[in-house]
Amino acid sequence: MPSEHRLAPIVVTVLGIALFATMDAFMKSAALAVGAYSALILRNAIGFAGVAPLWLALGGRWPRRAVLRIHLKRGVVVAFMAFTFFFALVRLPLAEAIALSFIAPLIALYLAALLLGEVIERRAIVAALFGLAGVAVIVGSKLGAQALDRDSAIGLAAMAFSAVLYAWNLVIQREQALVAGPAEVATFQNGVVALTLLPLAPLLFSLPEAAAWRDIGAAALLATGAAMLLAWAYARAEAQVLVPVEYTAFLWAALFGWLFFREELGPGTVTGAVLIVIGCWIAARRRPEPPEQSAL
Image (cartoon, rainbow, N blue to C red; front, side):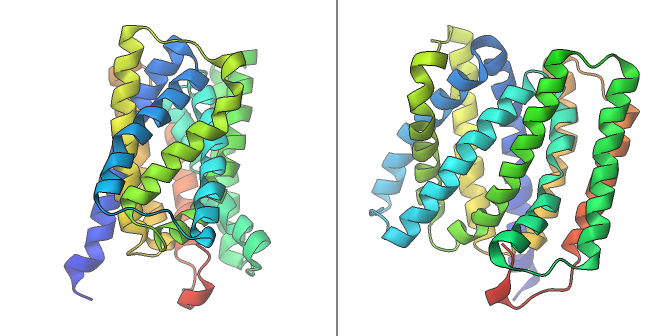
């Protein structure tokens, strides 16, 4: 395969992660104004309304049962993953929250063993230890800097739960990208997430003000574009090649956290993020498996 073809999925993934990181900043602003639930369900409803006509115009057809099952499974996982992530995001600095979410690829190794019957290698254990050390440094630096209040503790717990779901999402993501095009992936992800969250509307929904609508609309556009770019990339390269690229999100999160919210980036967060990234790089350098036995 030509080198430019090998590089293309990586470049597209970098762009997709940049869009997602920008979306996180808009969503944090919207969630602070109207709540994580309202911001999320409206983001996905707007995203569905925008991308579904494109999918149909490109000849989109109702998927086969096996493909629909994958769409539904990932959509439900993403719904709860995203809700707990944005719930945590309004209680934690942006860069700190993104850094903590980096443990997801490590958790994905163990979920692959549990769900797909893979053998956990020694590298995976070493990687997990680096990841746990990174989380301990981030949480420890937060405890050292200030007393851990109730909101921060709830935010940390929500982010941990979101990271587990994100790991499961990583296990499903390549499987989905191999059976559906980018427009179909974005259509069903937006639609299924919105429908999954809909039953909670009588309890949690609030109508946004004009400024929040602007942020939610921007987030919907960015999230849909990012989902399509990542679906394209994951259909053309193994997840173990692309997952490490996700750690560029920390740089964007640090920048946008400072620009949007004047959040300071502490040395503990940077050190912890580096340890987590080292762990994930160790995990990504595992001995390659035959394609039919790929973890993701």
